Amino acid sequence: MGFVKTLVKGAVVAKLVQVAQRELSKPENQQKIKQAFQKVQQRRAG
Image (cartoon, rainbow, N blue to C red; front, side, top):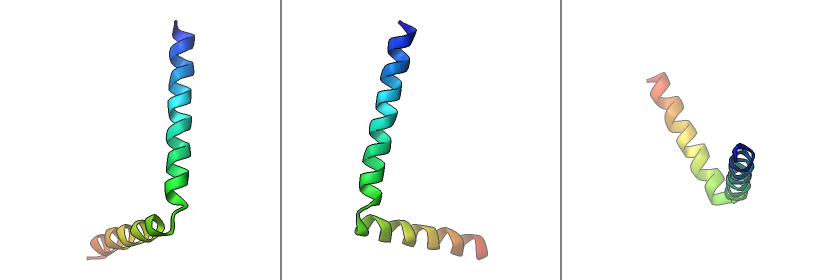
C-alpha cells in the first residue's frame, strides 16, 4: 500500500510541476512575477 501512495504522490508532484512550467512560460505571468519580485526588493531596501 505504501508503494501506491508514493506513486500517487509522485504523479501529483509531476503534474504540479508541469502546470507551473506552463504558467511560467506565459509572458503575462512572467511580468507579474517580475513586478512581485521588485516589490519584495523595495520592501527590503526600504
